[in-house]
Image (cartoon, rainbow, N blue to C red; front, side, top):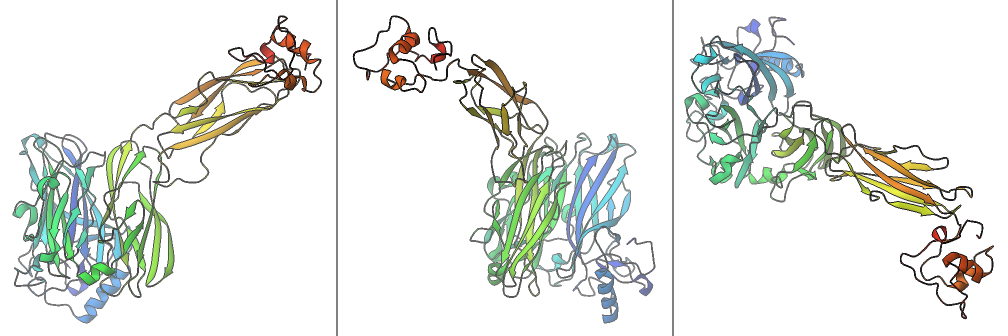
Length: 595
C-alpha cells in the first residue's frame, strides 16, 4: 500500500485519515537501529530498522486532542488491512499542533529525508508495526566532514520516556533521537545490531545481550550507554541499567528488574563501536518492559537445543554454531507454554542475517499446554564469512498482554572455505589379498570437519569385472545444527575373483569429494594368490592334510616349505614358524595345481 495512492491512505503508527485533517502522529516510537555501508568515497547507504505502536494511550501533551471512537475504529480497520512488504510513511506530530518536530533522518550535512517504512511485520495483538527504511545519500565534500560527524533519526514521540517514575506526565512521551557517528577516514561498513526491539526483564538482576556484527561478519568493538541529547533525545535512561566490568566489550547490559515498576516501559539507548581507532558508532534505541513475577513465570520458554530457556527463565548461555559459505544451516527451534488458555502463536526473528528465514512451522498440543516448532534456515553467501548473530523470541496468544519468552540468540562462526575431506581408512598403500575364488571386501571411510558437507566416494581407477563399490554417499535428508560435528561417509569395495585370476595384482585408487573444493585420494593394492588355501597361524600338518582335494600331507608340505622339510613323526606337530608367516601363494614351488 503506497502512501500516494489515496487521501485516506494509512500513515503508520497513530495515523488518522488525511481526509479528517490529521497527520501521522508519534508517541509510538519503540525501537530504532541504524547501520551504514559506504558505496564509494562519498556515497553511503543507511538502513534503519524501526518499530512503532499502531495506536497511542497518551495525553494531549503528547498528541492532538483525542480522536473520536469512530476515528479510532477507522484507524484500526485500516491497519488491519496492512500487510508485509507494503510501504508507508512515518510522519510524526504536526508541528502546528505541538512543538515536536516531524520524524526525519538528517544525513549529517543538513540534508533531511522523510521516513518511508517497508513493513516486515505487523501485529494487531501486540500493537506494533516493524519495518525497514533505506536511504541513499551522497556527500558533496566528504573530506571536509569532521571526524565522527552525526547522522540522526529524530522526532516525537517515544512513549516510554513518559513511563518513568521521575516523569509526572505518565505516558506523556518525549522526543527521541537515534544518532550514527561516522568516521569518513574508514570506509568500511558498520555493525548491525541484532537484538530485539523490546526486551523484557523479570523482577531480579539480569543481563541483556546486544549482539552486533557487520554484514561481512566483523564483530562490534565495544558498547556504551547513550551519552547525550543527540544520542537519546528526551529519553531518561533508568539508573537500574549499565555495563559492569568488562561486559561493555561483549554487549552485556545489566538491568536490575527489582528497581523497575512492573508493566511499565523504559527507554534504553546504547551506542556500538564499529572499529578502532577513532571508531564510528551506530545506535540501538529499544524499549525495556518490566514483567511481574507472575508474568515472568507464565511466559513461553524455548525447550529444544541449541536454543534453551533455563530454570530461571533466561537463555542458557550463547550457543555457537559452525557454518560454512554455501552450505545451509538448519536450526530446529521449539517453544512451549503452559499459560492457561494460551498457545505459542509465533516464533520470530526481527533482524536476522540477510538471506535467513523461518520455515516449516508445526504446532503440537492444546491451549494451556502447547508447543510450536519451526526451522531457522540460512545459507551464508560469499562475503558473509566471520561472526554473525540471530536473535529470536516466542510469543503466546494469551489475553492482554501477550507474553514474550524474552530474547534468545545464536552466534554463527562462518568459514569462507570448507575444510577438505580426508580418508580415515584404509591406510595408504594397504594390501588386501585373497586365495582363488574366495570373497574379499574392505571399507573406505571418509570424514570432513564441515558437518553439512555432502560427501561421496568413487573409484578413480577402473574396476575389474565383478568388483563392486557400494554406498559412498552420506546425505539423504537435511542435517540440523547440532546433529553432528562432522560429516562421514562409508563405502564398501567387494569382489570374488575367479579360478583363472591367480597372481592378479593391481593398484586401486578412490576419491573422496565434498560439495566442491579439493578432494582426497586413497590407493590400495588388491592381490589374488595362486593357491586356494593359505596356511594360518597355529596350523598343523594334520590340519593342512584335511584340506579337500589335497595330496598326501608330507609331499605337499615339502612343496610348501621347501624340499628340506621332512614329514614329522607326529602329524599333529605345528608347522614351522617363519617370520613373516608364509602363504601358499608365496611358497616355493606352489603353482596353484596342488589345491
